[in-house]
Length: 135
Image (cartoon, rainbow, N blue to C red):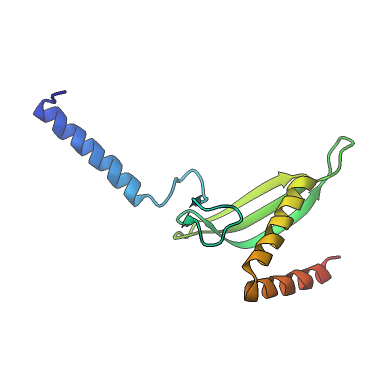
């Protein structure tokens, strides 16, 4: 395919603008998040993380949500923090049932066990202290 010189110049300028825009943008402005590439859910140090849009968690709140039907209550988990590399803060609520709650707890406890050493000891101490504070 042959391009007339003027069209080729316009296309190169367009591609440069797109490339520059994606290079300067820290993450998709419509969301926060970050990403994990490769690795396994149970691995250690085997994935590459894109932390540019990750939220640095500094507040959480968990509440029970009663349903209007004859179902067990749901869990509402509110997570809040600053977006990495930005001043912007985000707040996101997640709602799930008993299976989701159990999955979160078991994943975190399992992660602490796999990490071992100082991380596991600090996790257990913080877990026990927070459990004692529960009403």
